[in-house]
Image (tube, rainbow over the protein chains, first blue to last red):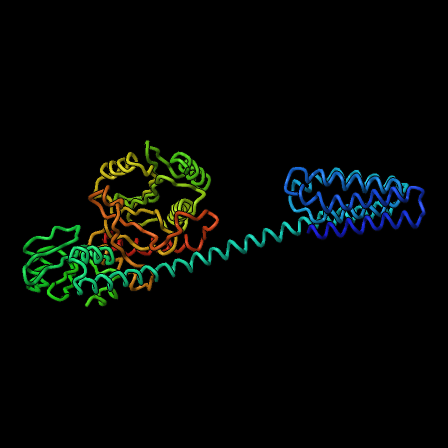
Length: 277
Length: 215
């Protein structure tokens, strides 16, 4: 909105200069110089002061200039330029800071016009437009924020769905990679047990070497030697009875027998179990 | 920083006393409890105020909202039949966990039908943690999920759960998994639809598991 304010100031300065020329004031030249100084200082200095507390000083300079030119040219309509300058204010504290100069300019214009009714009308309309503009922009801002929050909620929901899928694919990939490495002899049975136990929702993983009977396991349950021998024999009922469990899945991976133990229920693992071959 | 246990309890008490002045709230050091309904047997609903809990965070706000909505449904919609619903809010640190354990022991394990941990319910992607459930409950929950076509699953959690501390009773817990944002988002992301889905899931499961216990 800076460019808008610069244009308004330019039009203001041109209006003042033209008023001076048209009415052929004695102080025409000083008025032109003052106007040009005002305009150029606003273009050069204001952008620097805008990010600091001195921005409120810029309002004061604008108000002082407008009040001064109204006073010397008797052109009360120049007060409209003040309202155009403050139309772009967004923050509440800026609007509050602009109230005093607005009252001064409006009051002074009304006084200079000889308390003419129509002056009051256009000043009231101008100030109402500024206030309405502020509230409408606030409303738009609130609506935009609300729309963004709703969008974020939908994105969160979509993200959860994607997370589910991502988690499954990650576990699938880890499982397949570990199985491949194990079959190629690149990793040991301990590592495979770790990956299987972390990827699946089972209560226990037992990997038994069918040649030597050596076994590796990851389990919260106590796996007895008797249970391991049942695993070697492929005796599912024996395993279930020995460990007091409901489900067990037996798979052969090369020379190893894998047992996946589920205390009560085979959880969300069906697809992953099918991927073990 | 987060909100302390006292701040959370103050907020919950304020909300409850305003809406349900007849509810008798008992404060006992590290926990607060109150009952809805009548009966010898109890279904216990717990809300832990964990370390880092904040009412301004999504997880904190959602857990309190789910807690209050569950109370509302029991009080206004359908009171518990054949059992009492006990609601407990406790300090999630060691002292609070011990207090809950002692409280359950003082009730008597045989009187507690089930204990339900409401943390993480309503965050979306809820999975039912079976670590603390016995076979018959797991079977009934699996059946309920299948029959109702629910988009949830059961999971064996590989981290410390309430069932590692409170022993001797069936404990139903929920985990929002996988959910990498649950602890990072603010309360602005709270959605009443997710809260209502969470509570509906809870009541569906509760009805199915307790139906046979009441016989």
